[in-house]
Length: 301
Image (cartoon, rainbow, N blue to C red; front, side):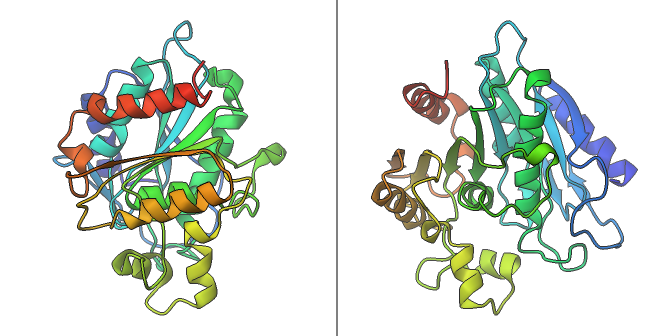
């Protein structure tokens, strides 16, 4: 379980950020898959709403009033370079936007790669993303969600996690009850890291996730642009052309891979904004574009 002080700070931050959060629930009812018996070093910076050294994954549940819900749901994966999680601007604020528009939102506090706490740090976060998607499907009736309209959204490293969830669903890394599908029905990727390749990959993030000397097979497996098939879910991508942290070619390469497999995709590139533009830009300014795509693509009814 979380350290009491860390959990209290996290709950307080959620309460301050939104009046829509219904509850924070553990992601797993029983044992966390692949977890090692290690000291809990998780901490929460409440001043900046950033979680570090996450070892106990949770979902913060945002539900619209039943009469206003439209059945669509989104699992949100904050970014932070797989070293932290920006829980406010890339989590709570986005969930607030969605829930005001009738969309159920679930902010995922996923485990961060660490050899000290997990058997295979390359799949810990993916296990959590797949479990979150499955959990929303399992509780769809309870949460007034359409099981065919459950998407995943990610920012930066969270975008890598979301794109991995959207390309690895045929090979689940977590056991789910009742054989529920872990495939997201759509992806929303915001300045995402996509590739782990030498030519395009984000070397620092690759080191955190895969280690300093990953095999070529591991690099290919976690390069989402190389894992696209005709069954990959539709995607909305948004990026800034002057991004100095995650080159816009990440989004472009994924869009091209989707296009060549005839997977519906839409991409928006701002000429300026750099990395993390959502931290400075009003949510409505860019999320309204995303919502239009969701409507046009049939994910909002």
